[in-house]
Image 1 (cartoon, rainbow, N blue to C red):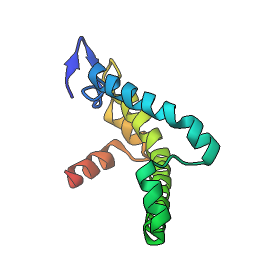
Image 2: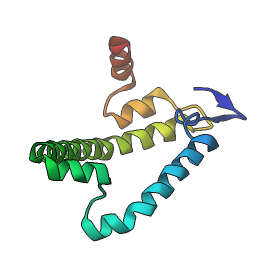
Image 3: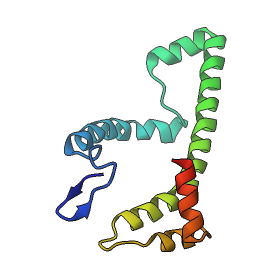
Length: 125
């Protein structure tokens, strides 16, 4: 982690550049243009994909299975995100502290003594 003007920078700061936000805005506009179709029919399918689905039930079945797998994968990722958000907030709080944070305070947050916490850190490193 680099320090800039006395403040700790987030690990994700290189990702959050204006160029990336511009790319997001372009894809976001394309998504917003498709919203009326999604609201009306519950999905957005290109003409080529729709034609292929009508011609081949196997293709339609495979496509729907992929969508179901994607939904399951997204649900698992959302559960993981819910679990990781408090940890990330805690890390940000510790890393953004302008003063020294004693190891004993961090160890206490994990229910350990400072000595046990240092042993644990030594063991996993």
